[in-house]
Each structure stands twice: as C-alpha cells, then as structure tokens.
Image 1: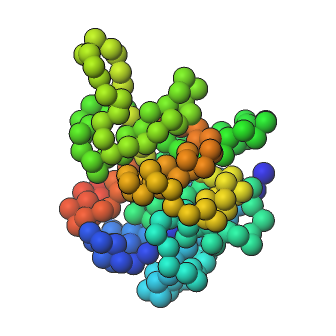
Image 2 (image 1 turned 120 degrees about the horizontal axis):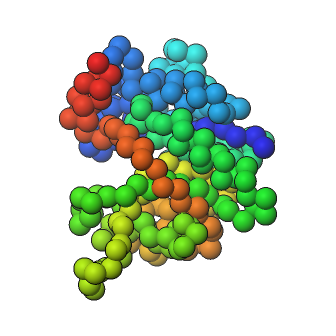
Image 3 (image 1 turned 90 degrees about the vertical axis):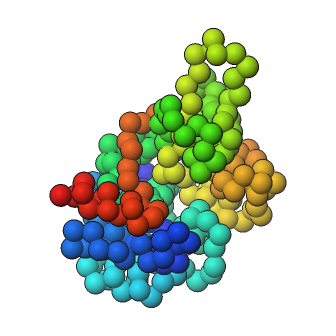
Length: 240
C-alpha cells in the first residue's frame, strides 16, 4: 500500500495572510509542518500543494517536494485531489500546513485504519477529541458517530441535542486531519458541493452526502493550528 502525505498551502489565509511563511524559531511555519511529517518516516512521499510563488520558493529552498495547483479551489480536498490525480498512490493523508506540532502517532493510527481494512469498506479516516468547552461555539466542528465510530454527521451546532442531563453523552470535536483512499478523494473532486455541506461550510459533509464511509478515531492530540497571530505566539512559547 503506497501512502503519501499532502499538505495544502495557500498564502491568502483570511484571518492571518502569509501565516505559513511566518517565522517560527528561525523557520517558516510550513517548514516545521513539512519536517514533522517527513521525519515521521511514515510516508512514501511528502508534498506541499500550493498556488503561491512565495510558498513554492520557500519549500524548494529547504529541499522539499512541491506540487503547483493549476486551478482555484474552495477547500483542501479539492486542492489535494487535483495534485494526486496522476500519482500512483493508494492512501493520501491531508495535513494542514499550519500544524507544526502534528502528532506522528495520530498519523500512524490513520494509516493503520486502511492497513487493517481487509474489505476496503472505509473511504476516509479522521480524528476526533472529547471536549467539555466550546460546545456551542460554531467555529468548533462537532461530530457524532455510530457504535463503530463511523461518522454520522458533522455540525457547527451542538450535536447531539440533550433532552435530559441524565444521559452520559460525550461531545467530540472534529480534528481536521484526513486520510483518504485516492478513489474517494477523486470522487469528491468530481462531485459538486452538496446541500448540507454548503449550509454548514464543512467539506466532510460532502463525503457523507455522497455515501462515503468515514472512520473516526478518538485522539488526545491537541495541536496548535496557527489561525491568528496569537496562535503563532503560543507556538513560539511551546518551541522554547
């Protein structure tokens, strides 16, 4: 089974433009992420997928692999799908470029899902973490699963709705690290956005509306995704 990691990287982040090239302990943020993934030793290849000259030059500057996007994309899945269309690969792991502290153990667990899936019934795998705060926060995507931890739905609202406080329910936050079978990723790329995906602005919902199976894994990995300048300062403190 050939497994690669793809790191979608665009320059114009709405809340923190240029964040992937921001300095973090002497290196750009994207370089820390790339090296963390590469040094895990889990992948046949690691690629950064970008539409930015600045990011492409930075990646080539430290000897990394880069694939240039030829089209404009609305989400990371589309950007990665375009990049891997012509690659011979079985499984693609999507790592966000602003996750310099990505956990190698979590990446291994995602790969294990496909290595252990003898019937090839799983199309995607992703991570979730129990939460007790931010349950009502629409910026925190929640996920509910069946008894086999396969995703039933993702939402920005608090799901499930509790009619009684007597029920011992755990809320889970979706951690946006995805692993795809290549054919599921390509199917996503060729399918137009779906109604619930459009309403919630959550790309994972398109896979569910298309009938894909998403295996969720509980994790204790809490990265520092660098979304705003304050996150970069937290990352600098952690690096120290």
